[in-house]
Amino acid sequence: MNMLVIKLGAIGDVIRTTSILPGLKEKYPQGNITWVTKNESLDILKNNNLIQNVVAIENINNGFDYEKFDLIINLDDDYDACRLAAGIKSKKLIGAYLKNRKIAYTEDSSLWFDMGLISKYGKKKADELKAKNKKTYQEIMYNILGLNYKKQEPILVLNKKEIDFGKKFAKDNGIKNDNVVIGINTGAGGRWQDKKLSVEETAELIDKLNNKIGNAKLLLFGGPEEKERNEKIMQKIKMEIIDAGCDNSLMEFASLVNLCNVLVASDSLALHIGTALKKKVVSFYYPTSKNEIETYGRGIKIIGKGKDYCSYKTKCDNPPKWNIDEMVNAVKKLV
Figure: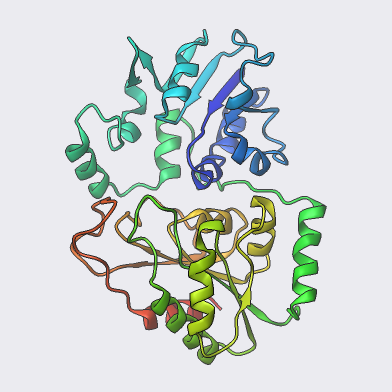
């Protein structure tokens, strides 16, 4: 059984989709898996021994064999992903594909795509279905693929070089084995503007955690687009925090998350990395739903107060209100 998994999407989505791999291997023990993704996600798949071949879609025309797959799984509504899925002969296709130059999806994948941007019901109904959904992403994926769901976890493997990067950072910043290391990632990507905590709320969270958690070392995380934001946070706090930097590579970022005992994160890449690395996570949600996120018994979920929770609005009419003490108490419980 030769299988092709197509998952481009956001890096966090690629990470959580790796949870299907144990299920596929259980159902097809002798199967070979090729995974097509974007260049930016290659590193998170490179050390995964359940994948036999990882291909960047940007390089897909360089010697790619279009004829060898028995099963194609396309979990993306991206046009290029759908064109690739439609262009390969296979015994079975599950997921999205091009039909008469328009994006369509197979009936057995309706549980997922009915709630998405390509829903046959239109966006309004799709958002309603998404708001009503109680299943996690992983449970949905196992359902549509006909796999036995046993809360299989996403897979992210750090190599020795990446682990050593984290160890050096810890040594350089005085982080010792007996410290409680708490990661703070309150920013988010640009799509949903109200996912994140404000600069002021993040500073309040940091100071309260420093006051409430003994022997703690706090790390402030962010991506390149959050450099200015994190500088403002550092200026506002009254107590100490270690700046993890905003210019780390993807795997350097993951190696620093790996130092944490507890991670406080928005519904973002950091959350998916922390989950895959089996970290305890306090995660917060608005306007996206908490129900899709699986934390495997290691997390506490917090919902922002407001009428636009689970609305999936890119910019909310009713911004969220956050109880910072609730987040602090959640961290204390996990510590």
